[in-house]
Image (cartoon, rainbow, N blue to C red; front, side, top):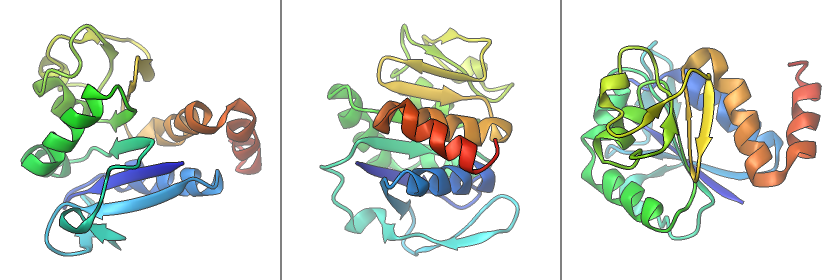
Length: 180
């Protein structure tokens, strides 16, 4: 299993770091990707992390999930990256897993990737989920696209993604180990 987590300056720290931790507990190969030209990426609450790789130096051909954390201006920075949007479009064309949380589902919506799919996002971004069927749930999977409402559900979202990738038993074992 291989997951790529995309980091842009202004990313929401909980929505990135908590899932990275959960994926790694599930023994999923996670690579953090900086979309800028430097590996140091600073979140919206001034927590800086070193990404594993730069977007420009990464081969994405083998993956099981592309994951987009939200946050501002992180979501805008992700949305302005044409290479990332091309990658997301290619992923969608192959019906391969994409996950986005908080404001990040707006990127998918503006690209038309949510047409006819159930989706959720952080309140106030619903008008950018073009063509989506808006859900009242906090986490939603519709075909190969998973979306979540915000930082408060980051752990549950990550566990649901682990369940999708490695099974319910693995997700339940991790949830129990962290006393969720």
